[in-house]
Amino acid sequence: MGKKNTLNSGEQLYSNAPLQNAELTSSDEKNAGPTPDDKKKKDKKKSGKPNIFVRIGRFFKEMFSELKKVSWPDAKKVFTQLGVVLLVVVIFLIIITAFDFGAAKLLTLLVTRG
Image (cartoon, rainbow, N blue to C red):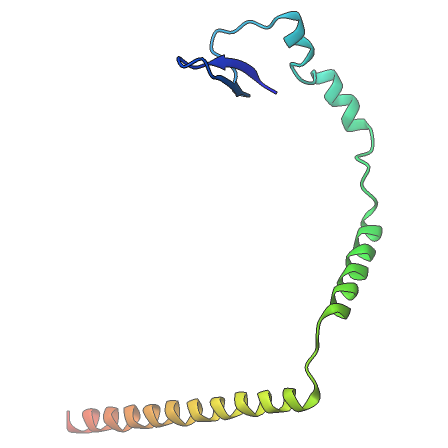
């Protein structure tokens, strides 16, 4: 934990923020964190992660495991939803084509009169 601070009401606060003008005591020096030498030693050691191929294999294994848990719709429901999607696409195709045709006619009228 951090250093103890007290409020005016007597409650104790714990903070990890460094205190201004604070000096380290011998107990604080032990908990001060790793030294640069410790960091070099740690960098030389393996991080403990499995290699990339093991991680990729684990990813696909977990992915297939999750896909087995999915409740897939039956063929009738899939084709019904496909029909709805195609119907909506055709309706919007007709609407957009009508607006495009109308805008093209309006443009040709404006250009030929000018």
